[in-house]
Image (tube, rainbow, N blue to C red; front, side):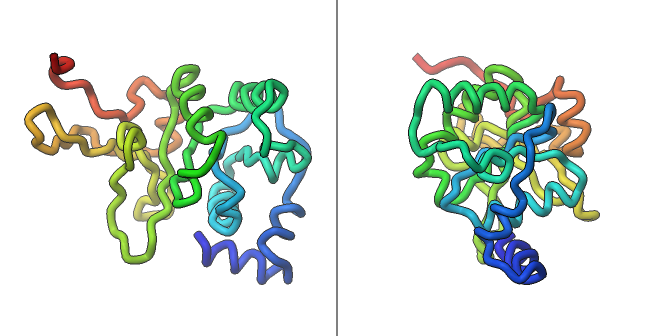
Length: 198
């Protein structure tokens, strides 16, 4: 994603930040994807935004679609703006990066969207030496999105440990992003096995 962002910036003869500010446009009445991210990851976000929009998706990224919104402060007005935008979005992709841990907003966005709509996926950005994604903390409870063999998006059900500690793989293990977004009867989350410990 970083390389993709650098290529786009180089093609326009600008910095990543300049490309992002140029990409700003009027808000849409509907979004396919609400991209939950942090500005700390500007280069990664530009690469992901470029990938998703190039694939034909309408993507909401606050500092691209609403560059004048001040998200540095948690206020009722900011929360209402974000909530209204999530309300007109089909899915939320949580961009899991090192910077996401420090975000004031991302966990709140994920929780709101999960309760309201359910179509929540994690979009992990792995370091070059990493091969597999293992969701940290509660992110491991959500499906993650990766590229399939043709370069399209697919949603993958996470592998989880059962009550006895055995890793559980469930079928189907993946489905296309478009089918998941359009028909979310199976959110691709791990199923609950056993009850709560007492």
